[in-house]
Image (cartoon, rainbow, N blue to C red; front, side, top):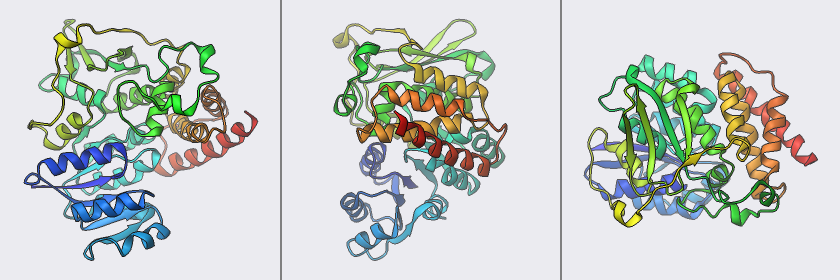
Length: 383
């Protein structure tokens, strides 16, 4: 029996993680969970899975939840509550499925507490990759990626030597607007942006996919996860999302991980690693698919991808600022307060105004995050 703590239980990855846990009740038990504002779903999950400890976003939400959940469930609140969930003594594996930089501090706390990490929160490594990987090394903690692309790379590298790797190729669907020109993007709606052709994801990640910022963040994440230079990380547009990513070796052999687009596969692998269990997903039928398509990622068409890679190369607090500005800009777009193309404008101008700190502490990372959010909001008012 593996005891699981789940951060972000009401989100897309969180809900699918609970499906995996429920499919193998003799293997997994949810003992701790953290959620945000979805009161009805929090109550439903609490009664269904009976965790020992539940973290919610605020005291107001806790008051609404408290009388409807099992009496043994202990409620905690906010950032301190997240860390309490992550470090709970019964927990073996922490699934970090929250969205945004809020995942950094609790993930570090979990690593220091000796927990295994199933990482679905890419912003943790984008904002504090040097701290996370160094702490994991010191603690002997295993970090297993949940993102489909990084899970694919992780699987392809099993049994291989790092020095044998020439480069990795992260595949990208191209998002909701992959067939639209830059001119056409000026007037796209929020509803159109949220209509992803391949994956079912939360709104923030879906918008990031449309701008290709999601892939840029994944490049930075891959840099830290696999200890590779940015010159060794390539992005390739692959519309079908069947090949989830590839590793190119020094002898020009290429290993790829393939499968239908279903996040339960990488989620379950992160929980069962190094074992594999059956999973209720549609099996891959290549004969039925017939053809797979690929094209280069165009930095002119997708400037957010270039912004992210450049920020990663600069390093220090620059990726933190990139991520924070993007989070603010996406929130404003989802509220129809700015246009789609203005997302990249806000990010670019925020980055241009920042003076990065090299090798930042956690406190310096958090200060850079706060600065970037303030700066981005002032820029948005001008858009």
